[in-house]
Amino acid sequence: MASTRARIALDAMGGDDAPAAMVAGAIAAQTELEDVDVLLVGDPAQIQACLDRHPNAPKLEIIPAEGTIEMHEEPLGALRRKPKASINVAMQLVKDGKADAVVSAGHSGAAMAAALLRLGRSRGIDRPAIAAVFPTNRADKSVVILDVGANVDCRPKYLEQFAVMGSIYSQYVLDVESPKVGLLNIGEEESKGNEVAIKAHESLQQNKNINFVGNAEGRDVLSGDFDVIVCDGFVGNILLKFAEAVGNIVVQMLKEELPRGLHGKLGTALLKPNLQRLKKRIDAAEHGGGLLLGVEGVCIISHGSSDAFSIANAIRLAKSAVDKNVIDRIQSSTRDKAPPKESIIAGD
Image (tube, rainbow, N blue to C red; front, side, top):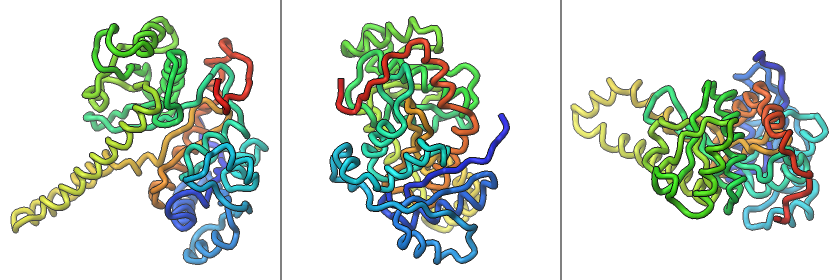
């Protein structure tokens, strides 16, 4: 599918190192991606001060906003108290057709709530899910895990919907022809797990729109045997953060141990290209964040600790989702099962 010019609204005030890291990431993305315009949403004075540190950067548009949602704040209440907060303004740009996607490294709960309030959920989807891409032991293959944080508790039908959305993501963004879907569980047998897992397994088996191949145990997550693995957001978030920690530890151990002694220093110099490829495979920053699936707009939720490199990759991911029409494809696949579009912010 041909690439088209996209406008990406970046929540410049969200993240541990905002707005400096956000601005630097936006500059990197717009410099590299010729068909992207990044809109920096936030406090104009702070953003401009960061831009002034990059005198040779391309010109970026600043969209004024007032304040941000702090990590300690309850998302829904804070969004309503602060209608001009940066994440609200960024989402409204997409709602109004002035931007094609949102990227935020701020309060993830606030980003999800703002997406639901401003954009609405896709028809036929009961709960949006955050999809994250993990590396596997096969160099040319990744696995999509969802949900990794949006839904602490899940019904079987939510997991089935996650599987449909994850399959579309895998097929059209990662170019997997017939994604193999697995249900994260404590055993391979369909009778294993709690009541939700057992009922979800039955539903997934009966769904003809996905290639469900059975349960995936913890050891299978990075095996490369699955293209999509579904789980509730409680388990998925723990899995995500544990995997990132392991990746960071591996990289740190290699840095510490390989250069020891003369032979180590020589070997490290020779292995430098290989080590760089290894870091690229396991570094979470390579993907930039997770795509929030199930809302009527492209929304990338990045880590609060994201640096400029990660933000640039998040913008790249947003552009890819726009080009591949992921949102439209999800809507098309779920339209026939669409329930009434009532708000789900307050729960069932």
